[in-house]
Length: 181
Image 1 (cartoon, rainbow, N blue to C red):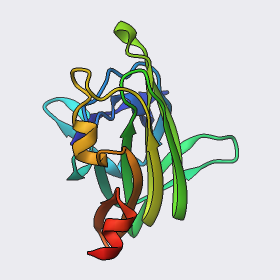
Image 2: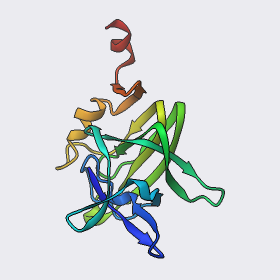
Image 3: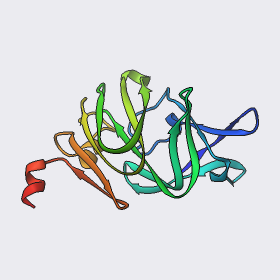
Image 4: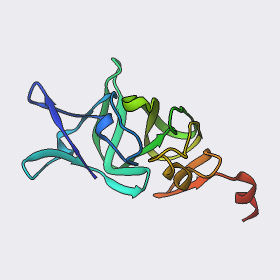
């Protein structure tokens, strides 16, 4: 998945996380700026882009990358050999919200606001350096057009865990069933 990169002062590449539309659910209108090492910037069809590898419908990865936050609160993806950074997108339902909690791993959260055409809600992006375990709880209507895929991605209850281990990702939306199987 390609995301267009812009430049601050013609030398510092960045993208806005509202342009990182992993699931395609909801219209994103306001997010955070994420600076990125120029080693990840490529030119495709006359545009400067960063290319993420898709893991599944709600997760991307970038090899040789590490997410960090500077002392001033600036979000940066830096080049770091032999590392893997994952980006997980957890959207809310129609007029809903998202709550996530990192159980294990090093993850950073950004929040993208949605509000066009009355679909008020949020989308969380979690930038995880390597393996992680995250609890999620999604609210909002899923029967509204464009939101039904949430159930396919995150389970009928829209509550559970995302487990990243050794490059594999699992969604555990029913703890009891998971223990039995």
